[in-house]
Length: 109
Image (tube, rainbow, N blue to C red):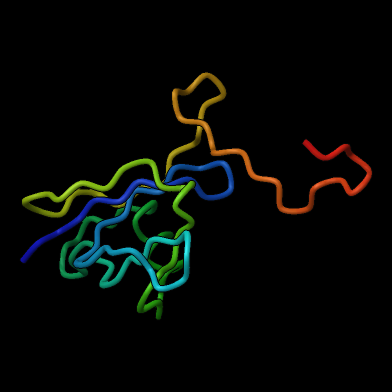
């Protein structure tokens, strides 16, 4: 079974998730992530960061992430730890700038 590690930016944090399928979504400009994979619930050690992600994505079948938020997608041999890390101010990762509501009074190029 193929496993993909997906790193993307969401609300100033870097999310690292593992999934069974990643593809270009039918909705233009989005990456579709399907079959999220989390750790085994049978283990006695519980990781609070992974539990938070598990709760956040509970019941989600497919997740659509904007392409400009995706940092990296890797095909890996086995699942690692899902986590959320803070995006540091001096990091090499910067969100792609977008203008959703441009100022109508600004001059046209």
